[in-house]
Image (cartoon, rainbow, N blue to C red; front, side, top):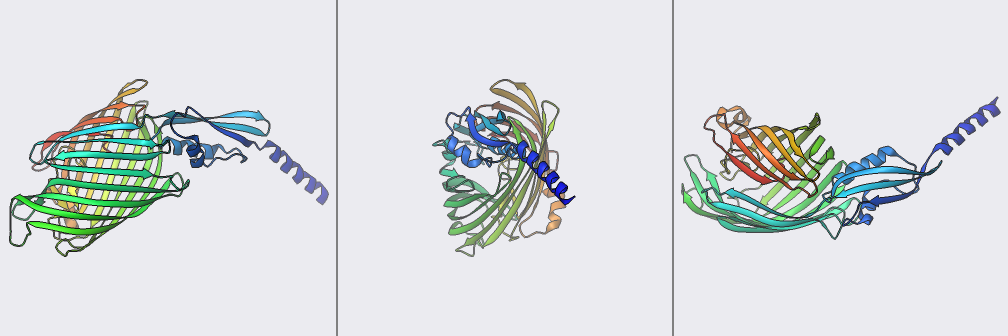
Length: 419
């Protein structure tokens, strides 16, 4: 009896083993500039392993998130009963992208930012870029980001910037304008646990310079400040989103924690943390519902230089340029995107949105979030002009109209989706 059971088990194991298909070759089709050696390093599917369609599907999702990849598919070529070849089909993006943003300065003067970015430098998914900005004052910056520089999991990012803007600083009785300069260098280590979980850890050494220009003055408020600071930063990203050209479906969470040390008590040490929760849902053949919720808190210092800002280009479309500051923020952006035209390379997309948020006043309490004076709600409409084969080639225009107390209205232009 025992002998019969033994042979029966051996038969099942033999049959199971015979049905296993192993991968004897992995190839990539459609690659032009991106190196296949990089793609081989990134994917988890390996030669000699047992065919696992779940793992291959995860690799496809991973590849579609790379800036040089517009879309990706796979097929299985059967060699015999026990052997297969896996073929990854890649549609590449054009990745050398100039960009230009036009906007108004706080004094309603003409302002712009121009730059150039290569998202696939040396064919290695390395982003190399720089920009020049004129916004009353001159600014510039350069950056390089190589997420797979050292291995499948470990990379590096370095950013240098010299930014000058005219910043409104809010005091209790009135407002003053300062020329604000932030010059620094940031170094981040990048680690990818898997296709869904990534972490960034690094330091930033910078100098903040405030020079009084006009407006309210007080003996208690300095007219000039020049302070060296350093910042420790931790970013944790979770992403489970399926990309299909302009359509997104899934969830992403991005946590950003920073601690800032100052060499001058006038601008004291502080910490800041915020988390962006993003949810996307396909609706029918041409619709996409997109949502972003930001929850943020910082050290609650009663200072006119509070870290969270209320601004057109960051959180509430139509509200204006840096119209308020706070030490806490709750912001919800929700919009419905609908494709009007979808050609081989061009997409025209419309959207209807509602942006809403509230802020905690510097030195205030959590009750500030429900005070009507701190609440902003801005519905609006917009258009997106998109190139399907050029990475992030999305020109957007939105019009937001406030419906809360003392609301404003206005147009917001930009490159890329708002979120």
